Amino acid sequence: MASLFTRIVQGEIPAYKVAEDDNYLAFLDIFPVAKGHLLCIPKKEVDYLFDLDDESYTGLQLFAKKVAVGLKKAIPCAKVGVMVLGLEVPHAHIHLVPMQNEADLLNFADKKKFTPDQFEAIAALIAENIEL
Image (cartoon, rainbow, N blue to C red; front, side):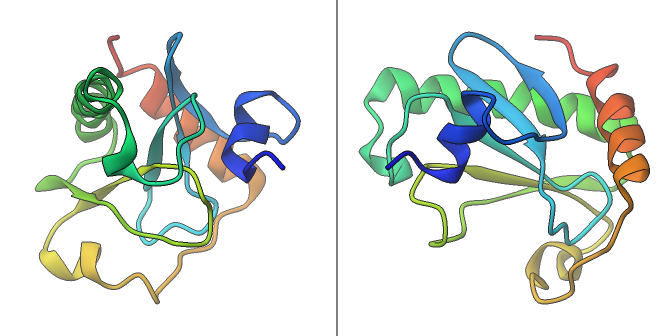
């Protein structure tokens, strides 16, 4: 059965997308720890990040870097934190989290709540700042 993220890639499940190319996709985390918290994934379904072939792994990292640059322009923050976390979805992914301090990245128990309209506005703001 396809992972939740593969179903997003295939358009079966909606997502607040911020960037996409032929091989990778970035979208807002629906259980964010900060405004602008997003995920970067390969479109190819591979469970574990370090099981990606070298080209896909490097491509995902470079894609995430471009997305992080746009994210920092869109959401004022000291840095964009990067974390590989999560066992719930068997699909490689990287979290990008705008942060003012380390606690913003390390406290994944403190989820923020946004309305669909707020998610859409955040996604649009980030998307307009990303150059792929």
